[in-house]
Length: 416
Ligand SMILES: Nc1nc2c(c(=O)[nH]1)N[C@H]1C(S)=C(S)[C@@H](COP(=O)(O)O)O[C@H]1N2
Ligand SMILES: [Mo]
Image (cartoon, rainbow, N blue to C red; front, side, top):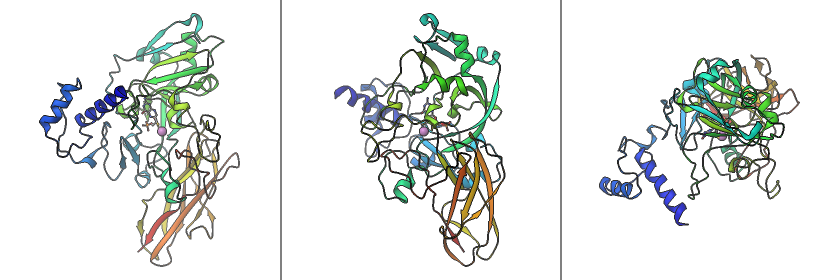
């Protein structure tokens, strides 16, 4: 289709402008001519000649190699960089998942528009940041975790193909969020008894898929019951104004649900008397595959259960010496009450020591001691159980987009 082709082309050109596309063998003059033809003239290319791996395109904060692994427009936290950092993930180590790029928004110009036929008299109400700050504030510790966190293990452990960003386990962070209850804002806007769905939408650029389809701005409907329960409009993260990459000035924060629900840079919220659909609760964020119906599972909500060692893969550990090894486990269904670890590929298991009380929206830190008996390769395993009795299985049932990986991850290390 012509329109989608030209949208794709414009997107690529914009990527080139941002220094994120390679144009090997094409002269700068030719690129500028293409830009002019696409109506993008006047925009100045940045950082021409920067090595591709230096940064994730569109992410504002620094992404040093020892803290992040850059994956396309996203940055994954390295678990090894969390060792000793405390319960909350520092903002400078918190993973970033961007469909496009972090927009530059000014807090003083920002306003949230609440609208739709789920409001009394179908009105439209605007809230500035100052308006939100006048409402009672709430502080809540909660993880944000991408639905695709752990996706790469479908391939590396289960030999199954999946589409999407090949995260290991670092597409999660826990922060102390401060903001206002969405329920309070909807109440002030005038919620009608007919309201059923709430659709927050980001102010970042339209998302254009790899095949050139423009899906519009990131938006995902939330059932009213969840919206009125524990959802926040957050303006602070770990005691600081929300950083640009995490939704400045205001994001939605949906505790215990998959990350896509927590829309960043929220600009408007539609309140609807009918159920709403967007690509993010139809084509994406359902389970598709042999084990699921053709239309996919119901839209995904709660996160699943996982564990991670605070060690790089293939980390070197000295043989014959006792090491204190640490990690974290979490579950969207209930707090983690038990973590078992194995240092011999799963032959024997023992309990890890837990350092936090179980909390559904957060994680528990744990530790264990291990003396690698002799030099050579070893596989470390960790398996969590939550308050609902759910435990990590040996394998996750396959789904084509690689969501909700919950199986025990095999973590290779080398005793040296
Ligand atoms: N507006 C907007 N909101 C968004 C996204 C986005 O690209 N644009 N990504 C979503 C996804 S898929 C995830 S996992 C989380 C990531 O939040 P973080 O970047 O603050 O870690 O934000 C969600 N909210
Ligand atoms: Mo995500």
